Length: 309
Image (tube, rainbow, N blue to C red):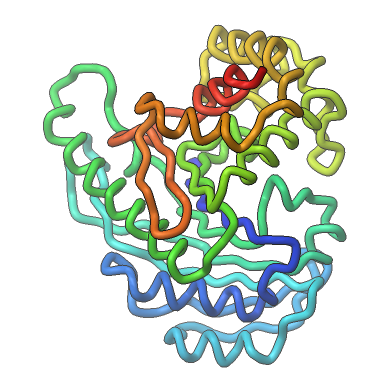
């Protein structure tokens, strides 16, 4: 089974209504040059994923999807549609023009509560690419590396452009890019957009809460009690056992400083030139360029913690 790539979108305390939000997601996606021209239906679920209160058949234009979404929009509803986009694929080890599927979803705050989720983890909307592999570079020298990695970089540049479009159109508080082999914790993110330094302070508060209290909504005990044989969920299975243990040790040492971190600490690390950053008209994006899906942002958060006194 393929691993998903997830672009998670986080808003302030009062996010847009989910019907409006899925429409805006569709408009941004449809304006992306790589996007398909149509959407494959729209489902509206209420309270849980077993109760369908609306469904519009495929295919839908952006205007048709927005019109269908306008008929719903309660705070306990989730809107879901599918589409696809062009990208390089590597089915036989060498680049070939192809496409990837994507879910576009938005949900209301009561949906989050009723489904025992944590909005600090999952946000209020997401674009979930069915398969992360077109975005992962080959790191070991081999016969296909010289052909594959430049095309992976093209895929990643296009994906980054989509994130920038989402930032401009939706004005979210934060966006993070994840791969679905671990909890959507800040230290498991591959890319981070932050509107302001407070985003990082809240991310560290979330990590501190997960460390001491766990994440009951996600059936996860305190990370402080995690041991090598059960670390994969909180510390991501793409890390080796040694990397997960090292991260656990570093968090154990530095997370007690979380409450002392200031916005100035965040600014200092962002200006340190130790991380790749893109300054936006509002906010900044942090990533490990060019192969950001091959890296995590744990070092960024650890350096911010280390900067606190």
